[in-house]
Length: 281
Ligand SMILES: C[S@@+](CC[C@H](N)C(=O)[O-])C[C@H]1O[C@@H](n2cnc3c(N)ncnc32)[C@H](O)[C@@H]1O
Image (cartoon, rainbow, N blue to C red; front, side, top):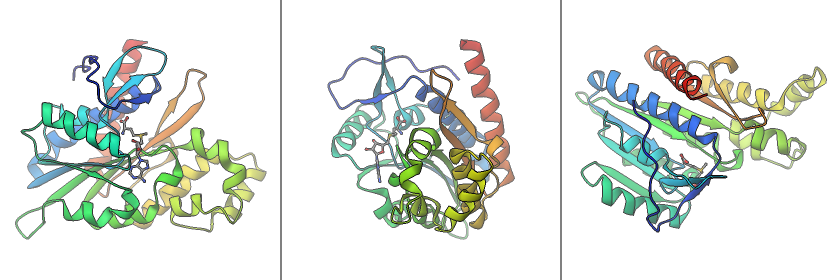
């Protein structure tokens, strides 16, 4: 898979990302590509859902590069999905993404919606093709929040009514560890809502006593919640830690599927995207 070329300014909204976000994008592209290739024959319809989509392009902090981001990267892959659904809470991002899709990807079946995904799960589900006896539909859903308060576990629970694999950014370093002192307060519901469970404080107290890491703890508790919905994986070591230039982990990318094939493909994607990074370094 070739690295997409840098882009020119087109006068529309741009996100601003850190250089390490390109690692996230690389992993997403590998997995989306493998998914579309390996799974396509087994299902009648495959759908890509990007529910924290952003505007589709970004400048990289500290450089003058403009790059495509998750929605446009996946739309641009050779291996296509049958439908693409995008959601973003920011109206400027939505307008920019719609315009960019109209310019480059008009031929693909896309839907871009503005709103808070935590209020829109049922709308998103109804935008997917309707499954039937002779029509099996599988989704691949990328959830890329800035912070835990952007995403509620109840949203994932609702989306999981349909067959769906998830790649989820868990903001362990840039959010969880920075704000732990606020999140542990019982009046703060951020982590309760992110995990879909309010019984974590006692467990964390015990782990903290033996020098536990709050970011790792959140990943394990989140995985426990996913397991309760019958998703396989993900051990902490199965997740992909993404580091900043000071070598601190800013977030982890975690993958969840109910199917062993999905887990196998994710392991493959991890290996390929790691190889790419090693080649560039
Ligand atoms: C980290 S950025 C996503 C970037 C993009 N996926 C990429 O590859 O660069 C998070 C995006 O989610 C949007 N957002 C934040 N909270 C949201 C929510 N509750 N529902 C939908 N979108 C949200 C923000 O406007 C922002 O564009």
